Each structure stands twice: as structure tokens, then as C-alpha cells.
Image (cartoon, rainbow, N blue to C red; front, top):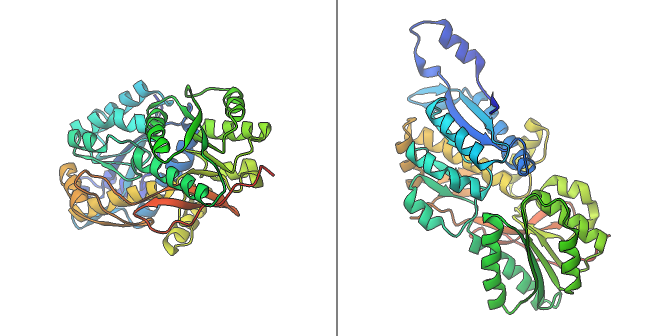
Length: 400
């Protein structure tokens, strides 16, 4: 198990250790993070989570740290690599809680990992502001784990966004009723596909191809060939980053000529546009943002300047916003008492780069973008819940 410390105000620590009896007000506030630094989900972690933690930690420490009890305390991030292995992940979370004794935890990447780790967060009373976790079990989970919060929407919300997008394209005469649908066979993909079968059918769409594939499948060409053989009007994939890239590459090779091509996680990644260039103009996918707000523009510039990388056009900004929520809650509650911070999150609104975040009675934020579309180098939102700033989708016109 690999451990590293990402951010720490070393000068403040040195002072604390060098002056016996000095106030411990400058002791760091420790944040634990179990990340996928290797394995199938390492790519998504590297884009959506890690740079934002770096950005946030550097910004907080540049101001002297978090203001708690009238003093600023630097933050320190203690991180482990779980190799995208659930058993390793649980082991590392337990170690952070019981051996490293971190003050707070930063929620992991992936629906399954958030749900798997939730009991440990609850046992040790860590507020868990989940971002890359999409499920229809929000009510059940937050009833069982009242310290758990959701910020990126539900399974049904995302499927409804995709359904509305396809309905709009159909009503505009762009597509017909035939949909080819595939999904990664983990909790994320299975749940989305299950809901989509019902929502698509209710909207009058015919699913002419329906196929799942295991996480980490190296060759997805048979999946795309099967979809093409079904002659769909639209292609929808509930996919994770590696398969989003692989499915798109195979669609280009096979010239899967549909006017609506949707892939899920990683469609919003800068690397996706970097790899495929103009071929993805008009591609649809999970997320999207409104890139034109002043807060979003400023965030994206800071992200680029500090980390040397562009944020994605979906969960990056929401993940950074979740860190802002945690920061504002700790400072607002004026304590590192985790139960008090959790109560503060429940009962207050937070000013973030995606706008105001506040949670309903089920610890769920009902403001999120659900579908984006590549338009001239930006992945703009074409469907949302509660944001109200999406634009209308347009037809995809080939792969060149």
C-alpha cells in the first residue's frame, strides 16, 4: 500500500515542532484520500479528482490554511493508492481512520467505491460529500448513512436527461426511434442501463441492440459491430473512461453513422477531444457545463495555471465544489468535530464555482448538468436538472 502526503504547510509544521509548548493551533488538519493511482479507473481519477485536490490544497494553504477557532491551520492530504481494487480501497480507508487518524476524508472516485466505503465513513462520523457517485439509492443510503451527501445527480436524473435529449432530436426530425445501448457491467453501468430500458421504452424508443461488457474489456470492436448491424438511429453507452475511448475509436473505424452518439464518463475529458479532434464534433456524453459563467471561467483558469492541466467539462468543477463545501462547513462550524461539520452541511447553503449547493432532506443536491455535447472545442450542457442554462442539442454529422 503506497502512502504519500500531497500538501502540507511545512514551515508551519516546523515551527510547531521547534517550539515546545507552542500553541498547536498551527497543527495541520489532515484529510485522507484513497485514490485510484493505478488500475482501470486511474485515468478518470487523474483527470477529475487529483488536480482538484492539488488546486484546493494549494489555494487553502496559500491563505495560511482553514480558519478554525480564530486561527488558520494548514491542511495536509494523506493519500493511498488502492489500484482500483475494492478490497485495497477498504483497507486503506480503515487505515486512514484508525492509524493515520485523519480529521476528514475526501470521497473516492466511482459509484461502487463510494458505496463500499460509506459504512466506514459512517462508523467514524466522517462527512462524505460524494461526487462521482450516481445512483437511485440516494434515499436509502443517506437514511442508513446520514453523514453521506450526493452532488452529481441520480441514475434516473441522468437517464431522463439523455431521454429528453433524444426526444428533442427526434422531434426536430434528426433521429428516429431505434436506439443501440451498451453498458459496462458494474454497479454504475448496470443501474443506468436498467433505468434506461424503462425510460426509453416509455418515450417510444425501440432498443434494437442491448449489450453489456465487463469492466476492463480490452477489445470492444465486437460490441460496436453488433450495434452497427442493428442499424440504430442513436447509440448510447453507459461507459467508464477506458471504454468511452475504445467505443469511440471503434465507432470511427466502423463508421457507425448515427446522428446521436452518446458515451458516458470521460466524454467530457480534454484528452477525449485531444485524441479524436474534430471527429467528435456533435458527440453527446455525461455531464457538460456552462463554460461561460465568470465563476467557471475563473476556476478553469486557476486549474490550468496551478496544475498545468485543463479540467474536464463535467465532474471536475463539481468535485472542486464539494471541496469548497467541506471547507466552508469546517470554517462555518468553526470546529474539526466531524458530527458538527456534518450538521452544518445539512443546514446551510454553499457558494461554489457551479453556483449555490444546498442539500434536501435526503442529503441530495438537485442541481446538476446531465448531458453535454461537443461544440467547437467545448463540451456544453444540453440537459440539466435545476441548473436552467442548457442549450438545445444538434445532430452529429459524421466522423470527419
